[in-house]
Image 1 (tube, rainbow, N blue to C red):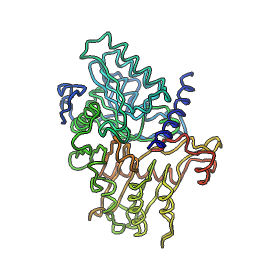
Image 2 (image 1 turned 30 degrees about the vertical axis):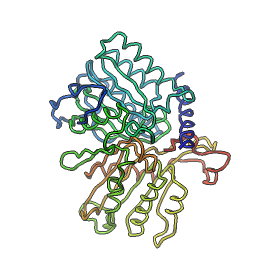
Image 3 (image 1 turned 180 degrees about the vertical axis):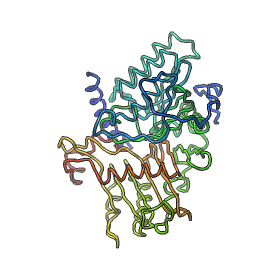
Length: 457
């Protein structure tokens, strides 16, 4: 654990350097942040059509776009900042008297901080959580320091009930002595004409999330159920103590999606893990209708930022079994345990499992500069007897033992459009990997660490 935290601190320090360069150009919990009366009403119809921001519209006319958003650190600024721009637009269009709640493992982008402080000055209430290891003597984090001091200074002008709060969690907020506060979600009571907005995925509020990482988020709009569920989890995280059951689940209307929060360890049962559950019940032949790959084979796609440890090996064994049985499999990864790499590369009647390292050493210094930070998995085909099943998983959770002990958000989607959008995104980058100087695996144990700038869990 100590070595892992040291590695993560190196990542944070590297991120600070990048930030500084840019700066120059229904659970009852004691001591919860708000009373239930602060929860938004169900008044706005959930079927209101939403559209992405047009900068010419007024704040009142602004509507948050629902669904999946991707970014890429390659290409135009709009492409790089697609996710951060979405979050920033939501902050800018949150009206006076509303509330923003943010949980991000790391908050280290001055532009985000400035927008949050502007929101506070127009009487928006802020509740901001972050992992403690990203603000310390070793990691001074100027943006967080500015956010903390700025909120404290302006709070002096406000009545106590209108004041904003910032806080860090040591280890997992909802577990205590293990794991990390690794979740990444953004909640808004109201944004323009949209209510009950939840944006969740694998994106931190950092510059690196746009310029160094491939990321994604999923946005729910005007969904009171998922907002209320996330609100209750946030209250538990703010209380910073272990609830009776840290693993929590919300089922959306009609079974189209589910939303989960970990930690899993302590109450952990592999049967609770949606990824393991689906992979164990996947069959490779007999896909019908519009599912599968045209040859009636089930398609499995994986873009794990990290897959390692005992949990990673359990998933790797399921993946390899499905590959041997005939599934159409592709894996694009960033960090993979050596034992898992060797296991997936073992020969079989079909050859090794198709895997690709989706990282980029842009300047040839043998250190990865850009990398896939997604935690997305898809299955399209036969699952649990259904020959036309669709499954996609997103969120903040890597496939590792450490993630099982950490605060994580996990979304599961079971409708064709969402699943195919995630699947096609993975396929595109698998077929068109970022151009990179070759970095051989033996360097990982050598004097140069290719992963020095990579979030290792």
